[in-house]
Length: 220
Image (cartoon, rainbow, N blue to C red; front, side, top):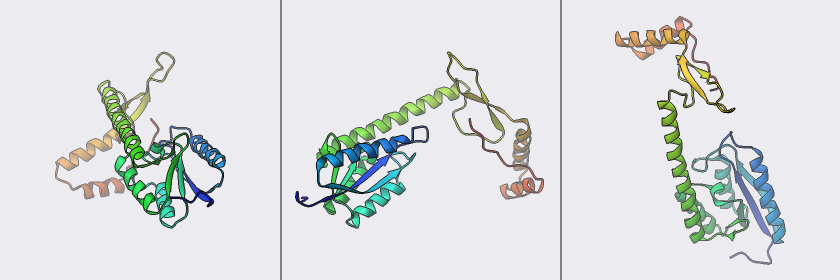
């Protein structure tokens, strides 16, 4: 238990998922947490950790890993975050973090909810993981639908290029992939040489010797 008369050191953690989201989300989360800490009296924010454009299901997040090291080194008494799903969306990761924090006598706090115990971690963490799984199913369903409609599902394959579709109802309708004639020649050559028994290493060496350009990244 934390001693009420002792000044408490607070570490804030903030995260947002993708580069499609607004990076100011980090600033908003940190501001909310700082305001919460200021209202408590005796709480001092000693460090802020963050992960930018990284999913909560990703393991090996630099900010999250640094936070765990900070806790193990006795750097704080409280970890404060906007919502538990900012910390992680994987229940196993959350429970392991909770155990490490508890071992170091560090509390986990969330504004508007206060200190989180093992019951809170279990319930909120389960909902966070279920949301991620549902999102994965919906994303896969959407990609399959786009593929069946002949539309681009993202990325770029050598031998193809992206062609933007006309807007529909004033909104972007995405793009389709069409054959890139110049790269298609190289693709046909590769398949023909492979079918003739040439090794991938030799095919690559011959392409380099012939100064055949590699794929050029492009936005889709």
